[in-house]
Image: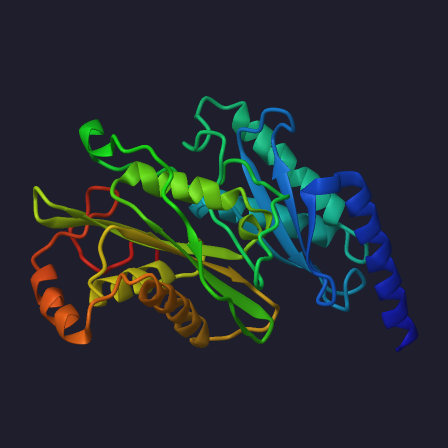
Length: 326
């Protein structure tokens, strides 16, 4: 190893030890060898209103000549707000080139969350829970990071009479698929109303590893008997078009009264279009395993009928199979 590389490695290890000591359980090791870490940041430790997970990968050149590769994970963080926060982090890097900056990044994000909590807008609509769950292999369902409220507020235009069922449905977890250090895993739950969708997301996000996933993509389809239409929606969670593709798969398979969440942990190597293949394969496998799919012939017939059905996007849109989160 070159002397410079050895120096960078030592500085990285010192920074990692310091971060773990400062932030304790909020600091999460995703992949020690690849130096991928996640930290849960909130506006208030005792009564958090806004929470964000910062995932970072430290390249060999950091901190000397390259910044950390980072991902901001919070379903409520969209558009200009996300761009502004990213710009702030990049300014910190430029002002401190060659220095360790993870602590500065974390505290900057915390300042932004504190400012946000002091504004009049309410926090995410989640009842103190969070959104998705992850498993790298077998029964590796560790609960620790427990992010608080990153669930996207689901503003369904539906009357309360349709959302009376408040019991948390059972959640099943599929077999993970790993490719070039990225891991994908599907989670499935039966749902019959939007409130259950939110409950499932909240329950999943209680899991430390799911909360730290780079993306938690989901889609659901609920059949409304009285109107003979489907209430359905999807979320990309930063993986552009993935939610729409997942929903399209569920339409083709003609599944009903079910939601599927696919967690992806990015391993540092770009997969290109293969990532969509893995997302859909994970989803298809768990839908087949849990007997939600019909025979190909039945699915084809049903798909023809489904063209008459409205695809509701937050209770408003009428464009089936098209993701609005692109």
